[in-house]
Amino acid sequence: MRDNGLGNRVFTSYADILDHCCHAWNTLSDRAWRIMSIGLRSWACRF
Image 1: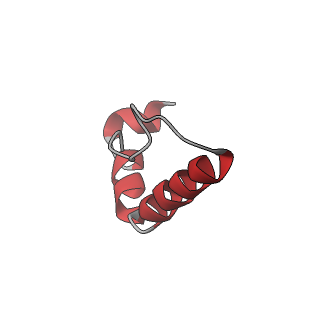
Image 2: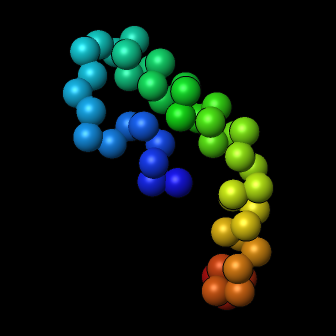
């Protein structure tokens, strides 16, 4: 999840930020199994 394309970047405008954030969100939502796999770990159920 760290590799979301937003780290260590210099954005040229607000539209550039918005485009990159939308792309990162869409990429994450396409990988719902990754979020589920984190939630199914035994240590995650303690909280």
